[in-house]
Image 1: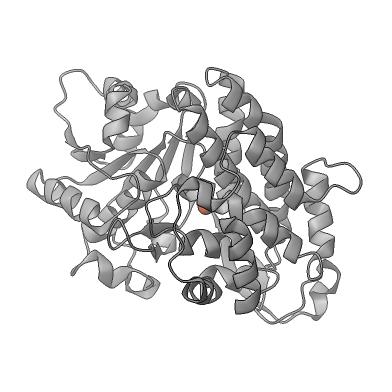
Image 2 (image 1 turned 180 degrees about the horizontal axis):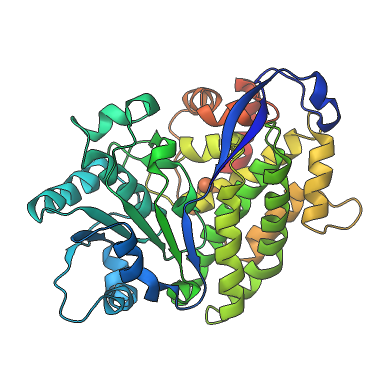
Amino acid sequence: MLFLFERQTENSPVNATNVAAAPRTLLPLIQYPRVQFDFGAIGTLPAELAVLRAVRPLFVTDQGLVACGVFDTVRAAMPSGAELAVFDRIPENPTVQGVEQALEVYRERRCDAVVAVGGGSVIDSCKAISVMATHPGRVGEYLGRAEKITPDVAPLIAVPTTSGTGSEVSRGAGIHPTSSSRGGSLGSPFIVPKTAICDPDLTLTLPPLLTAATGMDALSHAVEGLLAKTVNPVGDAIAVDAITRVCDWLPKAVRDGADREARWHMMMASMEAMLVSKGLGAAHALANTFGDQGLHHGTLVTLALPPVLRGLDAHAGERIRRLADAMRLGTGRHPGAAIAEMNQALGLPADLRSYGYKLADLDEAAADAHASWFNRSAPYHPTKDEFKTMITEIIG
Ligand SMILES: [Fe+2]
């Protein structure tokens, strides 16, 4: 389903009351794949493959999901005796090498669809696989080149096993040229998975720290989406619901991973946060800058949120207040401070230094964050000096 909404341009003022005066363009902002969502939804996989007329899908996953038995649950949903084509070596962060290795199997087995079973790394890798299965050249040639991606991509079914990235409904994918380099991005409406099968039971074994980090990533998508200057009241309403849901349920999911109700709400919040589709902001710019040492994206982004949110008081105060309402904060409590407290309560590191990040060059890092594409939708584009101050604080 495609909704058309109007978008403020980059330089127009950020004020919900002056919409009529703002120059606008038409932009498709919300694009839903077909979604099967509930406990046991994985049982719909054979029927969903049939809807796509997929006969020989490539199942793509990672070693962790094989070891903990989640992939076996997915395998068991397929007809008994079916010999599946499987690639199970996607790395923790998505890389060009992982995509190319999986593509070899796709071609060898003459596959006609891709089933992504995993978190953001697996689903993002599969978006690249679905493009490269039908497009010429190498993956690197498509990073940042949306215009090169045609609708002719291999059908992709996403089966998320974390509640964080929302990649199962998004039109973006981060791919790292190597495991120790910053990510490039693949973006196109044509890489939105054809189908998302969201089964909260598949997240029950996710360990507490990963539950916390991925859940805060979901929160960051909704927060930066709500704050984005793009005009889209539907997206704002979805963002508010996602934010409230994370604040209510993430602590419960971290405390007791077997709490199925908490897992259901977190999977819903994670999907909603990417359906907001208004763009992200400076916290994601910073997380991308810090993404060169193999550390988890969710932790990087939630450590960046407190200084970014404080810096927006002077530029998007009304939206910061709306965010505080969505988080149900009492009078005088700032969302930035509340997120820092949440990080601590959930057991996440207090700063990047204690997380193991080594900053090589402050000026270079600030310039990289300043140049990030994520700033385009932010309500305010921080200067390089402001990024330097924020980076110094986040490093600790
Ligand atoms: Fe993120």
